[in-house]
Amino acid sequence: MDIFTKGLWIITVSWFIISMKRDKNRTLKSMKKSKNMMGNMLGQIIGILFLIGLILTLIPPEMIKEYLGSSNTLIATIVSALIGTITLIPAFVAFPLIGSIVDMGASIVPSVAFLTTLTMVGIVTFNLESREFGRRFAIARNGISFVFAILIALAMGVIL
Image: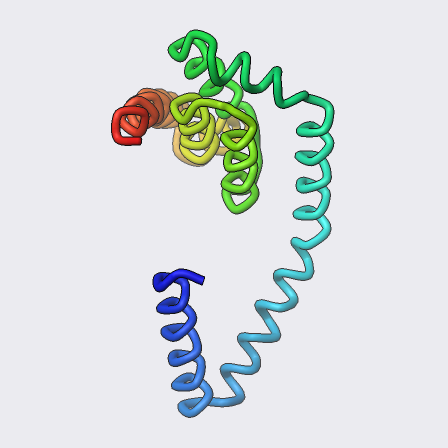
């Protein structure tokens, strides 16, 4: 465990102890509520993880390396970004997925493009967003987010 993780554990345990001392009943009630929330999401999370495992099993690592690693980086980045815009995966599942894809030989730039569009652009949720905030706003936000996702991916390619 690195120093950052140890620090987070120390902070978390410290705040938990402070919370228990201040109001034990309220702390335990919030712990039960969060346990129930996690229990409700657990089936969906396991389903998504199995689906990702199945996809990674069906797509050979050589294909990932060929199309996302050694091929034209610009085209791979744009295709990855487009796939990310239409995919709806929770971010906490996407990070390990991207780690696996990079371990299989994918380049950083397309991987970051996929991840950033996955979390910033929402074609799947576009109808809801346009209904709540207006069509012009939804188009502008998704368009700007897509452009910035590509810029972030390119910047990460330079940095890393």
